[in-house]
Image 1 (cartoon, helix red, strand yellow):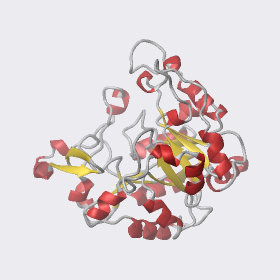
Image 2 (cartoon, rainbow, N blue to C red):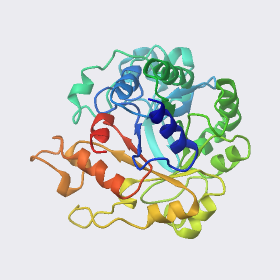
Image 3 (cartoon, rainbow, N blue to C red):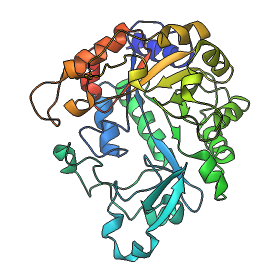
Image 4 (cartoon, one colour):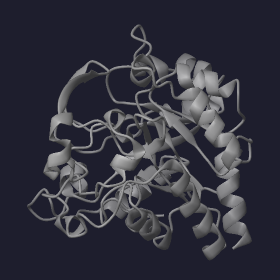
Length: 342
């Protein structure tokens, strides 16, 4: 038990103590329960996750709530609520036009009346069976879940909050950074040894957070495009040896989309590992990849089993391949299957 706690903390804040990667429950055990719910997080802990992930957006009254996007039409029952019909609108967020209902148009009290839903019901009907049972969580509540789980299990259960669209929120008068730092201070999560990994796709927020707190920071990197706040920068440039060295000036982790570590060929089969893990470690960065999902639709061709895209393939084997490639942590919707591969 002590070894597990030491290992988790070492991976969060220092040089990895063991070869086995951390398992980060992506929005909880979101392959089996609606994402970002208490049920998803508690199941993830039962399945051996080291870290649970809340995505953070803001309410109209400035509270951090746990949703993958500020548009909530696909993950709650808001579309069935006639009292909120007039809140449906179209907005442009990070250059993408989106129609739906947005957290910044609701108070926390209003959002708490909604109930969560499975985002991918066609792929995950078992999870969709739990629709309508749980409310939206605040960041405070997710941290409380992690702390209660740590006390219950004797393991350190960390949290990996992701700040979603900070530039967009600042542009509508809801700047995230001051409020987030205040929240971290209140929760005692600003230190270098805090059981937290703070993520963002944007660069500026992480740079500014690095100047204010000592908690571990992770730069998310997509397979295409670039940070919304740096239109002259691409993610491809950021994961060159020079880009990783610059990243290490403010971040502790680089968090690339999984195919940047294990690329795929034209037939969708995994090819040899890229140099990204080695280059990141040389720069002093740890590596966490996203996101392992069990359904054939999300797996490389050689890991698929059966005929349908919804059927589960060899995700444990895929997790093992990433461990062999040297990653320090793995985001997965299925923590138990990820753990089985290690």
